[in-house]
Image (cartoon, rainbow, N blue to C red; front, side):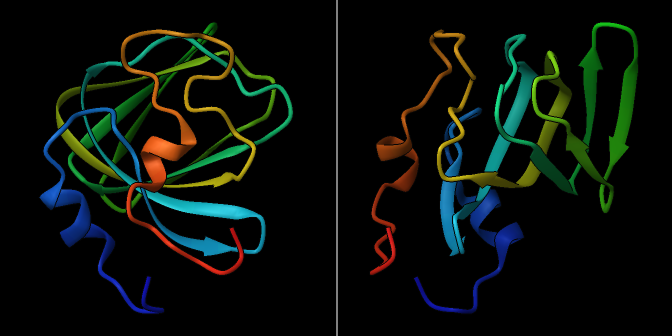
Length: 128
């Protein structure tokens, strides 16, 4: 991957919802983009935080005790070990920063889960 890319343009080009694509690598963290619509699945990442930056649209991050509404330009970090469920009523484009070991849906296996190999696609780096 080149050192310059446009996350919004890449996210707009994605054809599947809930299928993140790795666009860059920063130390031990993947930078990903995804196109979201509907509800994902309740899950948590026991050992890693997860950063969401809303590129376009809006997203509600559901927690057991609250909901956080996010709009384009908003950044939100889901703390490690926190049960959460992202929900996009309408199409939403996001950029994510996650540790390389972060499983897409935590330990929750479902039809929307994607392996890191699937998310990497054609992404190639000497550091992976």
